[in-house]
Length: 187
Image 1 (tube, rainbow, N blue to C red):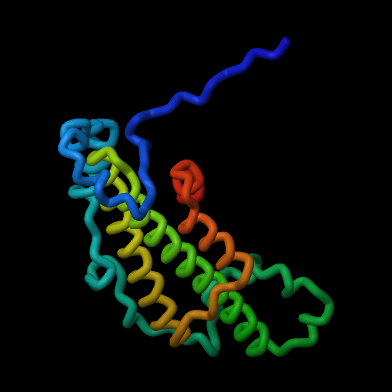
Image 2: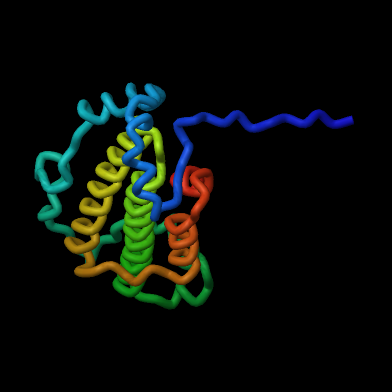
């Protein structure tokens, strides 16, 4: 006989529909703030970073993308195919750097998804502590979007469009009605 176990439910994850703003103004809600996220929220103040501050990342550092590979060629398995052996060194560099552009573009789109997902949690989480945590997470994801966008711009000009599979996955997570799908999606 198998034992049935229940998932522990934490009230910090109680949520309402995104179109139920009236629930957010329930006066009892303000006094039910969970302290579960307080340490994480406090730590964000100590770890603030500014992607536009050159002391963190200087996007103006020169890079010769015509003669240098942006990433380790071992990360590009296509180079091991017989047809790639016929490429000149310059063509290999260009291929590796376009692969890096594709990778960085996908990461940028993923960070944008994380930003929108975190912001969407602010609209539905009832617990003020959980809302503050989601807002802090949105703030952090916004910095990631800025940093990756600046990196892609400095190296490639503009990102590649989001692929259909990644775009559909991100849309499904951001638009999910269930809180658990959003939280699992952020991982």
